[in-house]
Length: 234
Image (tube, rainbow, N blue to C red; front, side, top):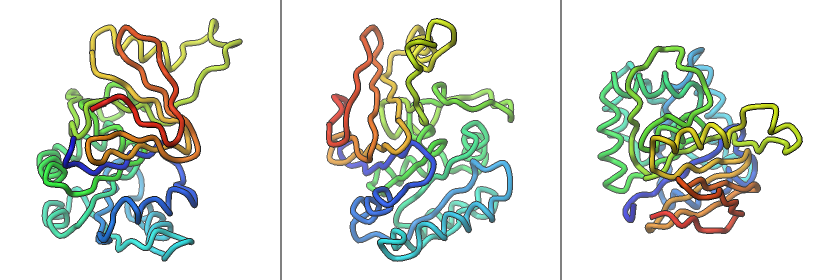
């Protein structure tokens, strides 16, 4: 992961801290392709909301130059023009299906390996891992292939929330589902609480934001990490 620059957000509003973090993460780069392919509704309206949040200069926004990358309208040309990529949230299965159909999976992987910064939120964070089998949403598009971009060696579970211990015996928890995943898969899973994100840079995975993340490893008890901590993943 040494040459990759990756920003993986839990989803929801970035908030002041997240908006301030993006220019730092991007360095001098400002021309960002924003992918709305995870949206099952009005993609143009989604892009306009993203632009309203990300384009204004700090502290109101992140000061980005946002370009709408439409998965069904010359997406490879738009990607080639961009200095960085932001993969928006929505339905993870629809997102991966559209990335595959448009030829973007291999193109994004190649650009990321070459050092292009990748930013994702929710579904956009899910597809950065080896597969999307730890997502929370429904497979409404009947996707039958689950391998993802493979930009990082761990899976994401966004919007992670620990179940109230008093209720855990009476309900299926996120932890239960992740244990099921590890019954047949070996790679780590990171649960991102709302308001948290990971920055992958210089071979290190660092927790940032205002919330914790929970690292699940096969055969081990899960461990919480706080903002500023580095995850023992390489």
